[in-house]
Length: 186
Image (cartoon, rainbow, N blue to C red; front, side, top):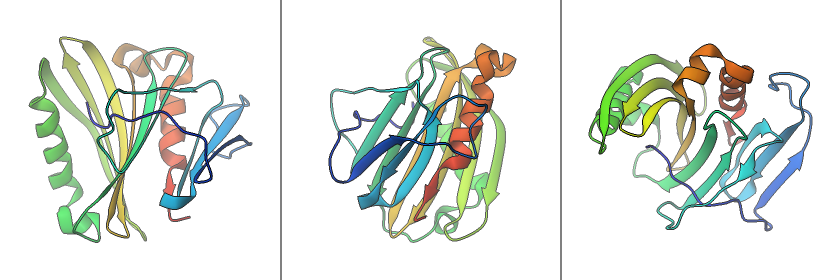
């Protein structure tokens, strides 16, 4: 569900390098993902590896998978006709739309909103946390959205719901740190 993305392809627009980050969940090594052409960056655990999908469906797609707990993150960028998230709707309206999309997916049995927060600024970010129970298992999604320069940026992190709720191996802490580190235009 949510963003599906292609592997990180090395090249002039993409730089992934090991660097210490303030948002690191502990003293473990952290890597930075910076995509200059799309002006975003985020930090993630150095143990996470690039992954792939068969078909590209976004202007930019990147996915990384963690070594455990079905953890992964994906970043997508797509052109839009509006200039801000507020033009699309309030945090409550956008959260409702996200949940309706999830509810309509094949095999989804239940969707529960856990948290929805607007982070005002330039650009404004919406952070939405929700649980999904489906025929493929139970997962927690922690996503961060923003619109900048008429592009929609979506960071979606996910993990097995039981691991997230138990904070097994600090997976909840890792996902929250990744989301907190996601910056567009900085």
